[in-house]
Image (tube, rainbow, N blue to C red; front, side):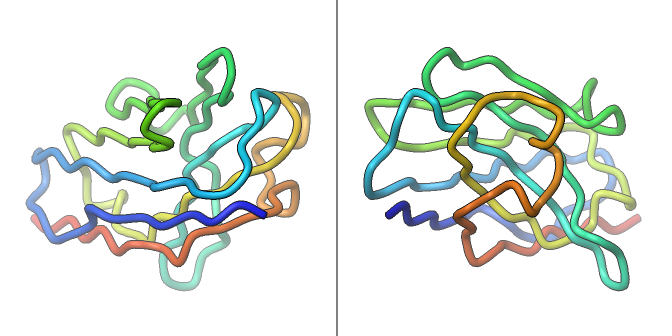
Length: 126
């Protein structure tokens, strides 16, 4: 069993930065993928960024690739999402998620993930 707890959300202005963290407890494996998803009101949950727990290989959605950075600390069992140059369109509830596997064709789909955090709200205003 894996438990995920997000923190760090809040309200910021466009252009600001914000850092989210995801505390991971329970059994972790090098073959896990840890990802951040987000869901805006009335929209589907979408992949933002992912990182492999063992090797630290990263993947990003095109819309955030130049602005966000995902990282993890295996010793501290924590995954971070550093968000820079925030835009109005980044407003959403952000979720941390974990799956057993690797970056393959399905890792950007929410249904591939076994474990989810409770979510943290990020609001970007003009």
